[in-house]
Image (cartoon, rainbow, N blue to C red; front, side):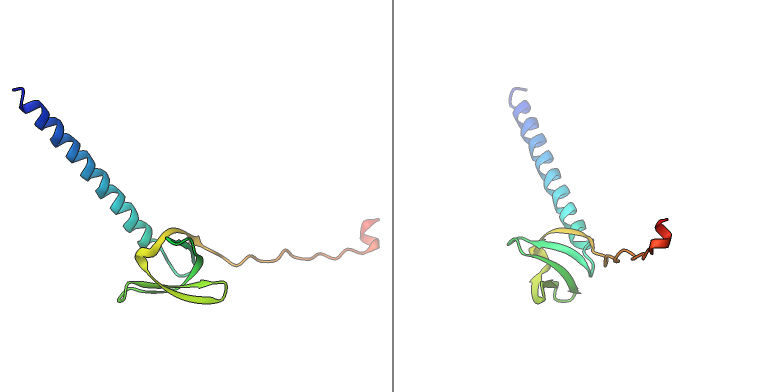
Amino acid sequence: MAMLLPLIVLGGMMFFMTRSQKKQQKQRQDLLNSMTVGSSVITIGGLHGIVEEIDTEKNTVILNCEGILLEFNRVAISTVTAPTEAVKPAAVVETTEEDNK
């Protein structure tokens, strides 16, 4: 009985450690799968860019980094944010002196 308790504790620790690793792997895979053209990303090297193209056959992405196109392996992406949308300029409304009176 005294030998059984340490084995149970060891088995429980191994179970929770592998469960944690699987959860992290699933989160990482979901992050990479959420990447679309136009997504803003940060690589593991700290390079910021916008996804221009995703090649699922070669498992690579092409990033636009301020006009420079660079090809990276998909696993080199550390952070993905939502696709950026073009910001529309505010409408200009002209007023005359008669409108102000």
